[in-house]
Length: 397
Image (cartoon, rainbow, N blue to C red; front, side, top):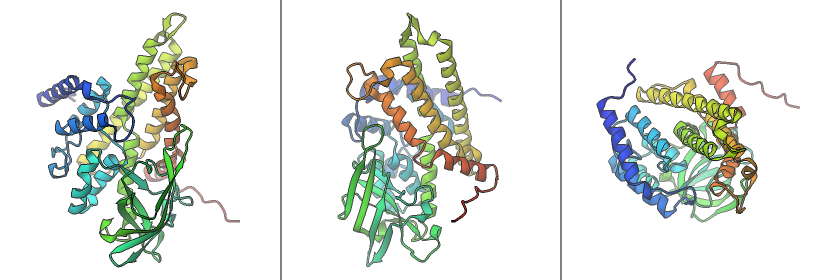
């Protein structure tokens, strides 16, 4: 097997490296926070213009319109990780909704939503979980009743990330009251400024309101803003969930994090010696590096299957579980490497990296639960991937 890059791909890597190096002054840093921070939007505009983001999205919708190329995608990820520069914007809109609309949306929906979303001008949140339907999403009760050209929505969602900052929501509602659970759900797109929407922040263990409760009272949404057909929302939702799991387990993002930890270990000292010389810390770093490399290889397996139009099988099922747990372990190593300074938080004058690692450690622990808990992911792997029997249900009292 010849693992050397072709001359075309070598030239592409050199082109990407040159672009990133000559424009690194435009890149936002960890302190440039906010979903619509001017530096983040300017950087995204540059990446889109140069074809370093949204490469395979059609030009008509704001992308580059290039054919999928598994090696070029890998090269891009490696170069962002190598330079430590901010990668293209991701999140619920770009990473989850855009590919869903490209697959299942109407031309009008793609034209209206994909371009502004890619540019970071339109921020989305996801209306899936409810107080009584988290892991069992098909039991959701938020209802949308047809009334003329509109749906009228009543109900509640919970754990809605970025709802306070979002312009739009993609939301699962029950439109067919008498249909079986999985067949009565529809997938709607609508503005978070629509009358009748109330948002209540939920402060998590990072100390910020990353999650929210969202209440709908007689919210009117045009029926044309449905993705797919009425009652087919479960199919659309599963397409979105597939992209979400991939987003939460991006191996290139994990590699970039690990390289930052290596820099901390080179910088921090114990008794005058670099922490990198400590065999215990060095072994932890190398063990995590091996897991990152394994996830990168698994990512190539998934992309290869997608390009062939095949199911990635087990390779796709493990992404979310392993990716979230790996990121949390990387953040834990960073905090341990900083010693007593690693436990600082908020506005301490001795805080390192503006508290970025502390925030990641707490937030990534939440992601092991969010987007499908680790326990649910293990059930999916065992049942769908390994063909094991379904978990027995508890006996009713």
